[in-house]
Image 1 (tube, rainbow, N blue to C red):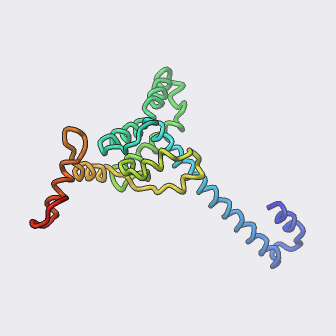
Image 2 (image 1 turned 30 degrees about the vertical axis):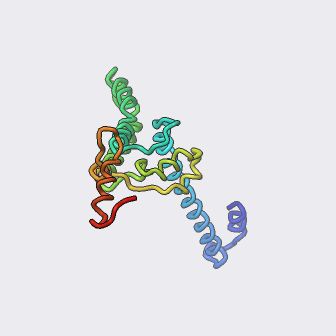
Image 3 (image 1 turned 30 degrees about the horizontal axis):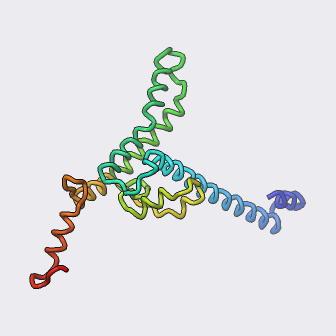
Length: 196
């Protein structure tokens, strides 16, 4: 970028072909840099989100989450700023002069929470499906760096998806679905066939 500035300073006429070519080159480099920064910011945000979920799951857990556990974890995630909002409200209630103190931070938190809630209720939040054993293992093996987030296969996790997972996997009293899988296998086989 500094070489381009030096070359632009050498150009005598502002409308010359050389000046226009150099300004196009500078604009192109600037746009490339902005695109790279956008990807880095997005991977940092996703890394923070995944590290929050990883921090709230037991380290020695090997089985994926049940849909109800995952739903509870997402509800806890959506309430992660409640304490900070309460502190801001307390500071604002102390005196009239401080009613606008931390207003920018409060607005950022409210907008973020509204966006995440609407994503979760409608189309889905971009997350790993922690009910899937392969994706759960990939989260547990994740090294925590923002650079390796791009290698994780993310899904759109929504309230509707979790409800359908609950109804698709009914559980018996022991917490496993062995009885349902046995009945499904026996009903799928023709009458003359026996299992060995």
